Image (cartoon, rainbow over all chains, first blue to last red; front, side):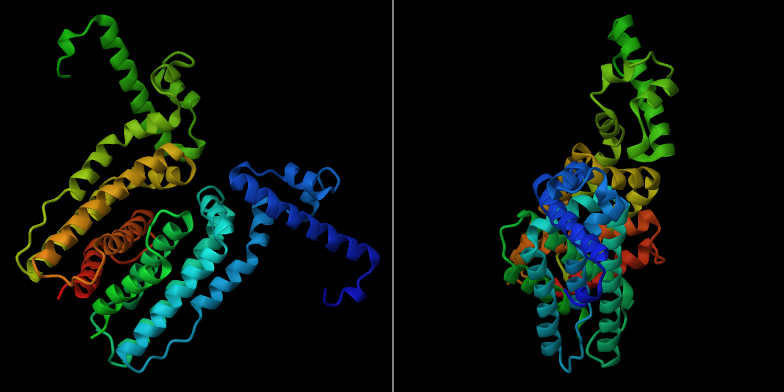
Length: 204
Length: 204
């Protein structure tokens, strides 16, 4: 733990308790799902005193958003991938790569993503976190579309932002299907099909 | 009321009570949203005896699905629109029309659709109803794609079902944005853009 040597004993204990609660939280959420998980279960599993979880986290929603911080950061990284294609073929390759990464990342964290999906429906805090991810992707894709429109690669009779939304939503919903196991096709087939449909419609 | 003259007095009263509860339910759901609505509120507003709502409906989820039956039926009608285009242009016109109808219907019932959106996240019964709508649209679109592939109008290197999903999800999510007022563009712009992107990618 970086800088831990500069912390007082009490601060160090606080960090350790927090860590214990997060680890217990991960287990409880994975076992029970979001709605059925309780702070009491988390306290119990962490062997911290009654009510201790509430000292560190306002509620289970906040503990959960803390737990998914790493995945969210990885999502932001994928959303922010550079995109400066010189040809339609280069654009296809880069877009398909981004789509693949988005789906692969979601599948790597499949169990957690299932709980995120559940939590989006019932927790305003988690829903807000996910809508930030959506906004970041859509704004990134909008810029990408404007770039290829200016470069003369893509049709310029499209509002970039509207097309960006359509494209992201296709990806998002198919990603959920992959995560929930509702689809027989694999990431390669899904990302290839979506990218071909999208670039076929958008590019000249 | 068709056939009401053949009902006994008791059956007629039961029908009237049921109707009262549904009307009260509509008001309570529209005022409080899905999660905050209770059967007690509905009973109270309907001036039916304590607990009467539970005689007619298992829970608020069932009362709500009864309330949205008409919209759901209209959705099915849109999903089942005939599609036998002879040219790419005819296909464009028919697809855009279907997309417009889907979005216009949702906007006509905007207040109820907002509650459906909320309920999908928290009620397994309502979520299941909506997933049936999704399945109907996706199966209809899959057949439409296979039709134009056979007719030689569309590229045949696409799995129809996968493309159908991508296309429906784009429409569904933009429809929710229109319903929730999260978008500045109107139905015409949205349906035109999505249809152009989609047909541009799918058709030869």
